[in-house]
Image (cartoon, rainbow, N blue to C red; front, side, top):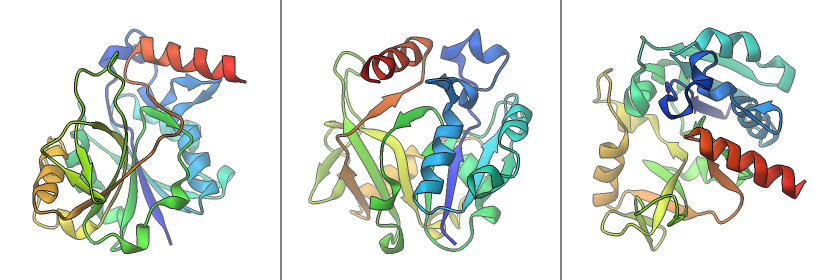
Length: 223
């Protein structure tokens, strides 16, 4: 069974005061919570098992999505302590639920039209990242470069989209704690063991109230 994890434990400081009363993944795009968009898109791509981590007001996420049967998926939850464990710690904490095969990981605070069926899930030996174009008005520099379908640490042409595939074996020697996955990604990129692709379709970072408003404005105008 194909598995995906939605990383949904962030506090959403830049979305306050909205996130004082709801968790960031329940912020709405075109009237639908962000995390519900992700569940629907993953289900449409044939992903039937979804793991969701949560911390701040996580009970609201569980009550909204329940077991996932409404979308034809099964959802497992990986609760975290107050403050969350960040991306790296969150993945490690959820490993017992993710199985032994490569899985998809998606940041809850993005909105995209990316088709998850295009990911080379069965071929991933270590990790595979999806990159998007940097918007100079929002980001002074990017995260990575892309060379011969491999992640390049030496360039900053593109942003990490928040979409990736990971093989669980890369986490075997790591312990649960509060830390980002970025150093591990850079380690594999340095060894030329992190493949990547460029996606030029619809993608929004919903990391702040201004970006949430801007995304809704663009999408409502387009529709």
